[in-house]
Image 1: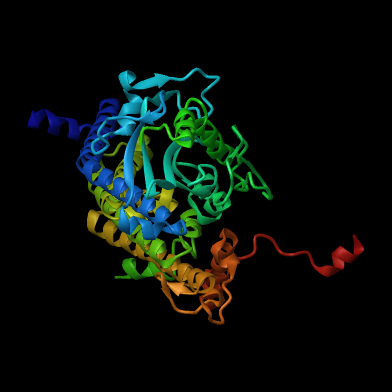
Image 2 (image 1 turned 30 degrees about the vertical axis):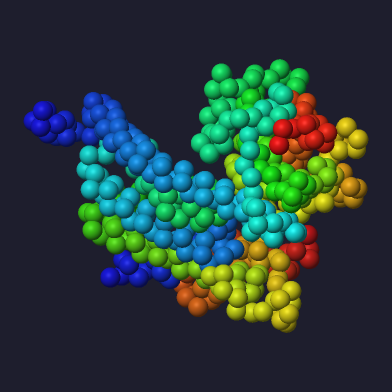
Length: 259
Length: 215
């Protein structure tokens, strides 16, 4: 074996066997190193990603006026909603993996193209939500939303105030949009465009993104990233619509969500 | 020793050879990102030069570029993964630019021009020098951009901005890409004025005013 390898190395560099052999050898060794490192570091990177997400959630809650005081008292409740019935489900939220549920055919629903505004193709049957309450009154409802942007899936938290209509915050926690253009969805300028905007007029979702936003229902668009901006609006339309949290929001307003 | 010090000023890859401009412009809005990028590039270019130099007598000439790129890309992915694992916030701020080291002309330039023809140790010293030269330019540009664009260095406030009750009005231009071109251009000009022999001869002589008047 070692002899054969030495004979291979001794071949002239112009020999096709040597060329192909060296290419294959370098490629195989490099692939092994990359794959090995990626697998070894995966748990650590995943941990970092979750920590960054938790940090963003905390920062978002901090940024909403009057919420940080409530967090010290009862804190934030993590609940699971059955999206079809729109009621709180009995599933235990502590080890609920929503990303896994969205990929599992038994725990998700395929969406017909016409209803799939956010271009996510499958929607999980149950979703996490977070609630901040003062007594029985809801002060803040945080919903996880996701949808296609320009070149990646954008994942965000949408926080609604107690009227279930006014946006308290919209924070993107994961995206892979074009750096410097679409990636600005994570920046304060775009986030601030959402704060205080309203979503519903009666039962109709009216929120939209325009450049030079002025009205109550208008979010300032990112210049140079209209597809990304529309992506965020479309996902809000989908997730607050009848195939997303729509039934749950109706139940919440009527007080029948099973809280 | 000259191999190590030459690329700092007289053969600086960025300011004299104008290589690796893209990343030099993109990551210099703050000192912290510039430093991380500098370290990543210096480590990658040094290791790549060492490995390629060690393999040089067995790299067939016809496929040398792709073999070099495979080795460089492997090292870049390793650097990127290590950053994601141990400095997650920083890797989020650098976005794609660490992975783009793979296409940085400085790295391929040093391995192709030097490491393919020289033993490992000199190659690594040469690559280290070039990495440090790149770092020097990056840090200088980042120093100016962060100081005048945000009034801070490494995130520590040096000049108190008006928004915080001080006197300093941040220059927004400094945080935008064009300012990096301007600063780098001024840097190249200053360097060539200081070291006159770095200035290139004009490609063609400007027409004299007499012929222009007659035409």
